[in-house]
Length: 107
Image (tube, rainbow, N blue to C red):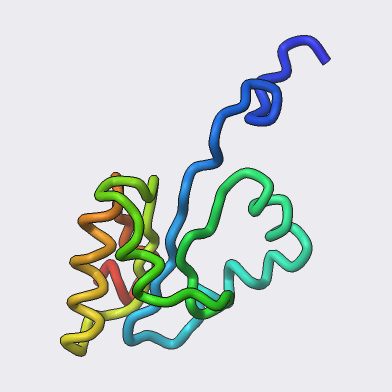
């Protein structure tokens, strides 16, 4: 179709996205999973490079990325442990943008 600006047509790489769950109820990750088959359409648009709640990712996967390589990291929950704090600092360094995702992270 004319006017098609899809990534495939322009050979643009998919933006890299990370999702990290700190101390929270899990509702934010569940909200994404509740997209059901529509999450597959999201996967067509973005490349999840870290989402340990839903896929098999490790800290080393994030460490292997260049600083700023992740387009956006969604961090939900409250930071309560030193491990969570370290992971948030690592994601901040590796991400162009970090978003506090959900009320636990925001408040």
